[in-house]
Image: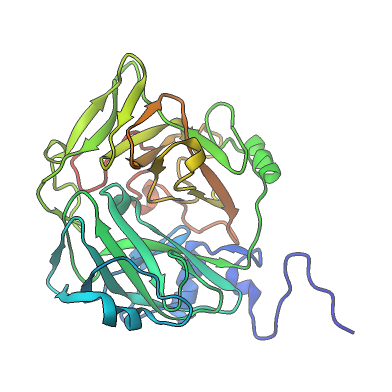
Length: 383
């Protein structure tokens, strides 16, 4: 007789579900990732993974020692490796050992120091780090035989690569620079709107009413506050280089034009320009959950929002207190000018449970840069 499957998901010989946390499915929290890394399971690396790379629900990925400038972005497809494709599209090789500048408008592919040794029920999803997205550096993960970006299929064993294309600012990177991050998921749990409404009732996810329909809606703030009418930043062109690894090193006004609220509460997004805006709502992510913003929905307008879409467990959260952090939005219009109005929905957060509460949630205790943020540029700029 075949044994009955568990209600959570079936277990298979050789697996150790207890090593993944309280639940057998979900996003792996930081302390579980640390344990697996030390055991050289799921994520391995050519050089030791530093504890500082481990975030509450993800792991920062590091650039390797070489980059290839390529003719165009590509996916290898089911029959090829990334190196197979590089043989036909690479223009030249760049040594990153002592640092190199990646120019705007160019596409680069960089092998990462980390690679995947995923079990058959473990998969991954990648995203640019918040600071990368706020610099308009378009970064995506590629695997061998991939048919989509930013996904690692269950059971994948092989190298990982970053595709990097600075859109506005030239950036200085080097071996070990961290531009994107990886969430590791076990199984494929679903989190419905009904569950999301119940979670909001137990622990408010936004201040005020929650618009929940295929995720939690966020809208844009274009009127500011009584204390400040500053509602955004627009990136300048032809600026200096930004060193991706240096914090608090730059004057914002050398790279950005401030945007103040208009009387109409609207702004016009110009095509091919890059904006930093903020959500009208304050957001809180309870410690047992992680969230991701849907990057682009053509039904709400011809623009893309939030290149760096991960929201960590604990972001904007404090037990018994209202949500305290705004979502900072990286916005770019497509093809035509687009009028964006105050309160307009610009994206939706989809939530997913962790396998257990992380030992350390997002916040000042682990040096999180964007906790309780309002409208905030990346960590490279003076406050």
